[in-house]
Image (cartoon, rainbow, N blue to C red; front, top):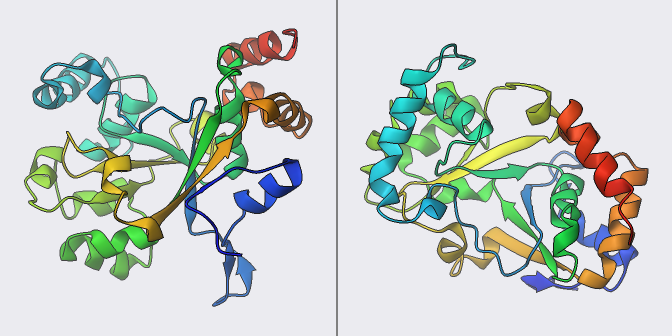
Amino acid sequence: MKLQKEFIPKDWTQLQGLLFYDSFNEKIDRIRSPYIFRGLSNKKYAMETSLARLGGPFESLEFHLLRNFKKYSYRTDAVNNTEWDWLALAQHHGLPTRLLDWTYSPYVALHFATAELDKYEHDGIIWALNYEALKNYLPSKLQQELKEVGSNSFTSKMLNSVYSSLTELSEEESEFVVAFESPSLDNRIVNQFAIFTFMSHTTSLLDQWLLDKPELYFKIIIPSSMKWEIRDKLDQVNINERVLFPGFDGLSKWLKRHYSPK
């Protein structure tokens, strides 16, 4: 059966099939999904970056936000000290950037689609993006970098070998999406199996860019009526705030939600 671009599972069993849709790699005879996942608590939410949510002339603020983040940081965890390392570090600590958070794990995405109890009256959504196919829309020099390394996503060093800054990359005329895997800054990134995407132009919206590229994505609607069942089952298999946000804050979030009444 051909998968619709927007699919609504009828039950938990059908949901499992959708989460692992098209994940078999015939070349190596293994399960190796070409998709990365992003879970949102409300299906109506656009894939808007934290930078865009600032409003106003946010596109002109990007440079200054990152410049001042670097200037006022009293120490750095930026591994290679490239602008791409700084960008990942800034996003990781809450600075508005053009990065969007994704995960290789469909279950981590399912967590984020069901973690907010005050959104349980709304249907959630999981976006599945074929990050391996994104390279077909990249400028030739970025495609060449991926080919030379034999990768489907970029590290900070790989990006820096082509563009030394966001400003330089943004000067490209074409509109494209970069899949960027940051260094493992802490256990949160490791446990969330995290990866980022960002657009070549600050004002571009990924969901708008995808509209005429159905081969790159599909969406799973998470019915509000299924959220409690999904949430309880995720807790039982240890996909929760305690694991995804290691430390006292994550532990407290997990306990608060776990003991909240239905």
